[in-house]
Length: 197
Length: 109
Image (cartoon, helix red, strand yellow):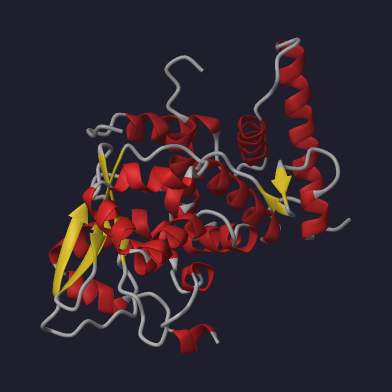
């Protein structure tokens, strides 16, 4: 084990080698993971978002100090040292990237998708976010400004998506069901009630 | 011999699991797990073959570390690499080179 790179680096190297040899695609690996881990990970983040939607004080604390506020939930899976939460609005849409490698708030979002660490996504989302998001299925009106946040080892970002219309009176558990991992990265909006009916 | 999920999650050398789902301490474990599963699904090796490799890997580690507890996914990863080398899919040397290259990347992680 002396001087051997960490397992995470070796796993990334193996996945890239296997992809280069044409033996698998990152999306295939994602699909297998999703098949096995549907209920953990992103549900942590979804609960945070749902609480922010129903509790104004919580929302204010979350935007002020993401890491401390998320810690109120006591999730397992490691800490996120400094977590900054960016709230989407009618005027602004936020998207998150790590341009250097693949930093990701694992404790609240679970397992990162393959596309998040794809070099093309990483470089293009910074240069042409509106187009990249549209390619991923998210069309934003021209008057909505897009801000892209670059995560690092010290600071990780989480997007607080807007609460969908038609959810008045919904409890936190039901609201959490509308929050996808991709909406917390900024690659999608929260699901609408009619999409989960 | 079934390569279905029951065989995967139950039986000898099954991964740690809760409520029928494998439990991972870190994302790399899920990637390694999924790579093994995918290669199996594509027919590069049977799950019985992989499992035999994993059992042997765990036994070898325990023999070399009497009284210590093995880390499941460290053994799992090692077993997968052994199998990939044996099948001439990917060599340990190749992985070593690429890993060291990645480890030398200029960033704070």
